[in-house]
Structures are given as structure tokens and as C-alpha cells.
Length: 310
Image 1 (cartoon, rainbow, N blue to C red):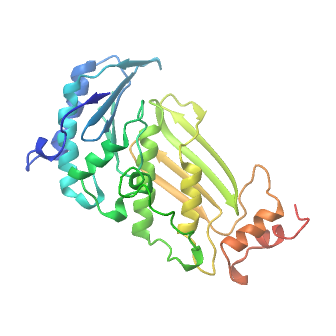
Image 2 (cartoon, rainbow, N blue to C red):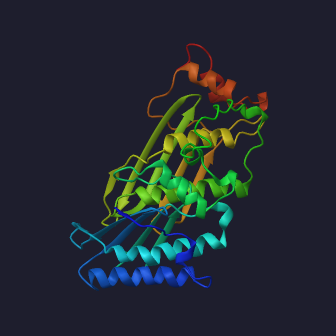
């Protein structure tokens, strides 16, 4: 981990092109590692104004990995890139982590996380985020709760009241896309270096949850993986997508590929393919939490809520 006196807006020229800066980062990675002998070069940058951290991993053709200590100078184009992207969309804020994946085929993938706390090791001081926001201010609606909690003026605020989903307006398509895209970028920052595709199956009724996630590697192997924050995210999303009188979905299949493309298929009416069918109390809880008009209560949910049903 490195610290600097300032990596804020003064480090970037007003005419900096983010695409050119991204390419500069990619070229620097090849210069560091060489042009052959690898399957993938993977760089993760975590950044605030006072603190920066770099992790560089090379995936060899035989599946082994090599950790390389990247030069501190690499933070300079990254800081300029952070500023250039912020200037194009200041309301959303600056990214806190970025991942650059360069394939031996020449494909170059980038992902930027603006909304989730990076995985610092060791953890950084809360004051680093407060200092960062002085130079990279963002709209309150784009300031996530974990970030507000680190700011002195927000630390002692009273807990927000519990949301009543029946009184909330469900997310529209634009809002839904923004929320799920932010979660996608969070996952990309955390996935293993050899990942190629991610499959997540999430099922829930009431407070009962089942989740399974598998990663397909670049070598075609399937491995189990625990997506950080996925249970909290999809549980919250169920409430955010609740439609008055119609309820909300009870299962989703989420698929993500290394290029960043993803799909999410929500099922509102069919019974989830449970590993272990939940007790009746969870079906009852579902109908209390997400009330439905009679015509929108599927038979499996109605029957499952009956005492003694299995």
C-alpha cells in the first residue's frame, strides 16, 4: 500500500482522454510483464486521495500465478484516469477501485467500482474517505450508507426508520440497471484472477434464503464461490422491486462474463427450485412482507403458507 500527498484533480489535465489513459495502463502492464509467457495480466487499483494500493497478478499458461510488486509510478496514470472519469460524471463520484484485465489474445477489460467499499488490507482510516470527498464530491443520492457512516457529520445520526415496501415506488428500469451494474462492478473487483464466467442462483421467500454461486475459470473448471454481499444485495433488491398488489420475485439467475456483460432473470410466479423447501412460516412471512392481491398469489405460495404443508 502506498500513500501520497495528493491524487486529486490537480493531477489531471482538463483534456485528458480516459480511453488514452486506459491504454497507457495496459501498455505499462505489458512492459512490466513482457509480451509472452502468460495467459492473463490482472491489475487491481484501490484509490483515495491520501492512500493508494496496487495488486498485480500474472496468470501463466499452466494455471499457476505470479504476484508482482508494481511500481508506485503506475499510480500516476491511474490517478489521472480517476480524475478524467470523475469530470465526466461528477454526480456519481469517483471510483474507489478499478480492475484491468489483459488477455494474451489482446482483449483488454476494465471495471470501476464507485459504490462499494474496497477490500483494503490493512483497512484504511475513515478520514481517508472524508479527505477524498473534499476533492471528489458526489450527490447525496449517490453516496452509499457505508460511506456516509465514515463521515464525521453523519456518524452520530439516528438510524433511519424501517422501510415499508408497500409505500415505496418500485425501481424503474433505469434505476434498476444502475443498481445492478454497480453490484456487477463490485463483484468484478473480488472475483479470482482466473475467472471467466460467474453464475449466481438466489432464491428467497420471506426471510428464508438460498444462494449458490459458481465460477467457471479460463481453463473450463467450475468452482464454488461466495459472492461478497450477494445475500444482502438481492434481499434488498426484492424489496426495491416490489410492485403493490403483485408482490416481488422469489428467484433470480445472475450471469456475468469477464467482459462485463451480464444478465439477470427474475421469476415472479414459479416456485423456486429449492435445495430444501422452507417451512410454512416463511411463505406466510412472504405474504406479510410483500402483500399480493388474490389473483397474483400463485398456488405454490398459497399452499405453502398453509400450516402443515410441505
